[in-house]
Image 1 (cartoon, one colour):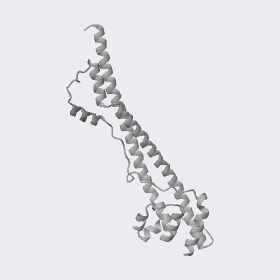
Image 2 (image 1 turned 120 degrees about the vertical axis):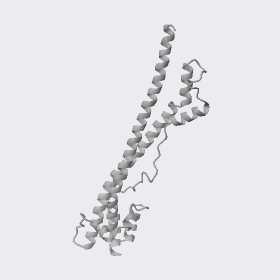
Image 3 (image 1 turned 30 degrees about the vertical axis):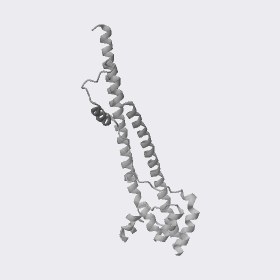
Image 4 (image 1 turned 30 degrees about the horizontal axis):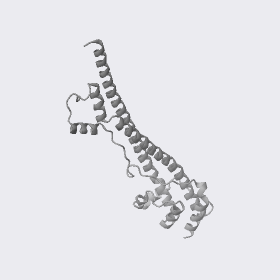
Length: 228
């Protein structure tokens, strides 16, 4: 083997090693991004669970299902978050939801109104932050899947095998003599699966408008609810 042959052989080894190194480096990156996505989902789930008492406190402050329905209709919320969980609470637990909230006002109507609006304002502020995190998770998911598609396209085993066989002299099978079914199986195993998030994994929350945008409408609804 002369110097040219040795140089070509070294170049082949280098190219093969670069393909393998790039494959595993990109795969590690996708695994890390997938784990980061999962961590974000878990944090969202935990924070969403901590928001449940806020919604339940709103239901308790409103005091009746017709009042709740009227407020939810005003807010254009068809599915009431955590309402079924609220119904399963006993009266003592429901009263505890209002600890730390004291509606102020000279009249019972005023105290009722301010109690509900106070709880709503806190709920809207916290749910807005959580919805922002929800949107970031969806963006992360979209970008991750785009990277996965690029990875699967770049590291198609059939193409890699053809490239390496060409380096070996063209038309010669790779070392080990993989049959077509074996190549297909290996190609499938090398692919990275796109990530999906179900609504159960990432349950959405309704978008609540700022209090200043709905104060007048809510006040009117609360006044009617108090009279009922």
